Image (cartoon, rainbow, N blue to C red; front, side, top):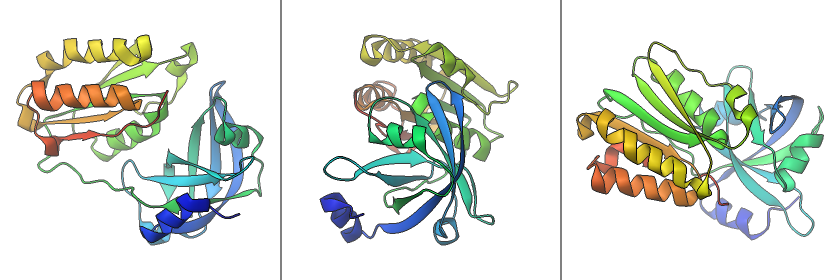
Length: 240
């Protein structure tokens, strides 16, 4: 399957393509499905790092569609990982619901990177939703000695069952129902973060929600709270 003009652009940007093979799948909740893969040699080439993601290609009616997904439990020795799909309407969700062992999809590695904050922060502030839970988990696991406050926007009651790898003694989770296109989450962070922040230069703020919410919170963090740009990572994960 060709990747169309998007594939051409990614190739020009030195994207690397790999073939993934499904080994199994299970439902995490009624709105989240985890699919397991062998990596086609990918991890041996790229290595593994927190928040690592790949672009996966799915068949569509007229052209292929690519979506970016964070790797769950990547194992470069075994050459395996999983992807957690937030289920809704669309080609990626349709594919994930029907995925069976032996099926293959193509993945492109381009654009994914992570720089560990240096020096380590006194506290992390992680702001996301169900789509960014896998990435949040990698940060909590990669920096276990750093205390963290997590704001997690929830859409469904079952989002409380998504596997967050928190340590109660060091990590605090604040769940915020999604209302008014993310406005309630923005209000919650604006109300709470200033009192928790301490020295802005000693913090690390990571934001990955829908694009508009991410932009609003990144602007608030950088401009109103004066957190240095090098201590803020913000990436819109999806558009409503």
